[in-house]
Amino acid sequence: MTVANQGTRDRLLAAAQDELIEGLGHLEMQAVARRASASVGLAYHHFGSKAGLIAAVVEAFYERLDQAAFSGAKLPAADWAGREKARIGAYVAFHYEHPFAPLVIGPLSRAPEVLDVETAFTARQLAAGARMLAAAQRDGIIPGDLDPYLTIALMIGGIRQALIGALTADRRPDPARLTDDIWAFMAAALRLPAKPSPVKPKATRRSRS
Image 1 (spheres, helix red, strand yellow):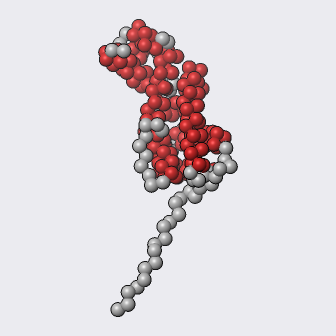
Image 2 (tube, one colour):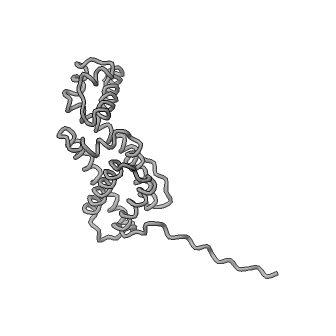
Image 3 (cartoon, one colour):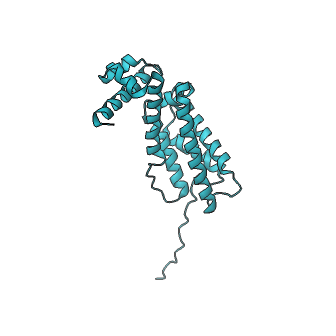
């Protein structure tokens, strides 16, 4: 794809996202083309149909989420639990800050054209999460009797439902508090302490004068 074609495609994606947000999940190709300063023919050329365009917008959203909280994320932390809590914080922050998030996890998630995108992203999350839990079991971080596949499925489902509730609430909960609450749920499922144990200061011997 040439630079010009890529630029047109990117403009159409951005315009379609804006149209979906303003239309609460609905868009028309002509409106997208006008907003992107492109022809309707180019919109169909790049995406094939309105359904294809919507799916591409959702896929771009998930690619950015992957970079922010999963494969592309840089999550500095002192230990495994700290890194995974930081991942939840990044996941929550991304959804709170992205204006398209309430539609993706809400009304658009039920659209037929989005199901394949959702299914593929969730499958990648489940596979990567199960591998991460299995590695943590080998390292002795979490109990070995947990089923990694079942556990990660329950965790991902719980986090998603918590986000749906938070993003659709009249007043969103504080993101830091939401992160703490989600981590407490996950730590309990993994049989980890919700908060790191405080480090006791070493006893010091008083010098005699």
